[in-house]
Length: 620
Image 1 (cartoon, one colour):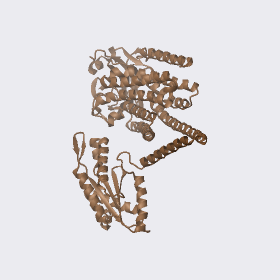
Image 2 (tube, one colour):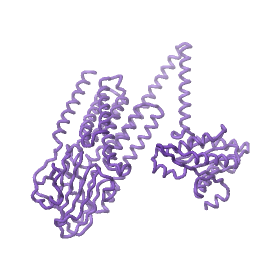
Image 3 (cartoon, rainbow, N blue to C red):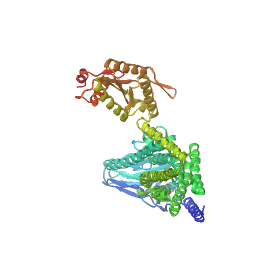
Image 4 (cartoon, rainbow, N blue to C red):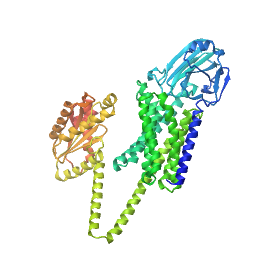
């Protein structure tokens, strides 16, 4: 490594050390002062932020009760925090928040605490000194402990005119103590909730689309940067959706233990995969081995923290994970800057893409550590930065392919120049290389015609074969049959056993269909979802019906073995036969088979229906 590289690395480590000292001294960085309990007038406003008015006390011995606090509320030395949202950083001490509420009219309101990773959250409402509402929930409890099913914590409240109310909120958590607390008018909350949910789904959609796109590229070219990139995108999406409560609500609502581990596992996986991706994407392992080792070290630290997080409680692992995420962000950012100075072409695109995500990650981590206040920008910094990052990095990956293509073209020109001067041995080597490229092309062409899950033909390949057979049968005046089948109650299988089980069922059906065909001209393909289709050239209606019935019985009699369970699966099948001529087209044949399939579904499933005029009448 050059002298400049050593200097840059030392500067990065010094900055990281100073940052760690700052974080260590800032776990309670919010400015606090002694105060009496504040009061908030509840008027007709659609949204009232109580975070600017709540005060807090801490209960190190966990011995306070809501009744005792309500009775002696004026005797406590209440504290307030700076900013719009109380943010005490990492603190495992049980903390009580309180505020007086004075409604000017009788009204119903929705109390929201929009920080879904609080382990224990208890809410109490006192009316003129009498407790009228009591809720106990939190991310450490099953999802159905929440009074309103939502990714955030929601509590219905009824306020009566000329009554004095005391709101008490008890928080005990292993992570950061933050209390974004808002009192909403119900319709206003619904509108804001839908907007935030749409933003999260947009983020999830972007991440999923880019993950699938780059995974398909990885399957095609088998280059590890694409796989590490896919892992980082998925882990990043899971970490954000876990923090927002989406995964807990929809994936494991009855398993809060899984929810506690999901966040730390996702964050450590993301840190490790990004580190390994950086080394391979930038190609620094051979050119700059010391830099490569430093970045790889952080990847292995991420792996170690991942294993650590699987066996150690969330409250213990989240702090070192947050600190290491900040340090890794700074190191990777410094690496990009250094490579730009050295004229590395890909580093410019790398730093442009990753700067958004790294800055967002740093801001978000500092927010969780209590260094930065809880505001919209700090809370959504990681989502915004990550969305921009994955889009720009996809462009960078495309440019990387472009560079490799340019290198290949250059190599081809050099090979041509050498060929002109070389002997027969060199010409023979060029010929071998050409054959290898041709084989690779034929293999890619073959893979493009195969369904990735079932390993049979896909719909595009089937349509091409059907078109050719239709034209051939038009000339020879032969009958042409199509068999279309659909797995019965497939959604129930996915919902009950999971999508991996559903995939195994589809593979099972494909295997039976493939082994049931004896002629080389017969074609079986996955037509879409759980639908399969067979092309039987020179086959009359009775023969096609017999093939369909054989397949139906074989599937019915051979349950799928999944996790020591046998899952029964059946199919509904439609059969159609035509003699091609100039007045018809092959789409009519497929359409008739689809009608027959629909009729089979209507008649009770697990049967074969042959298309004729009665099918049309039945469907009408």
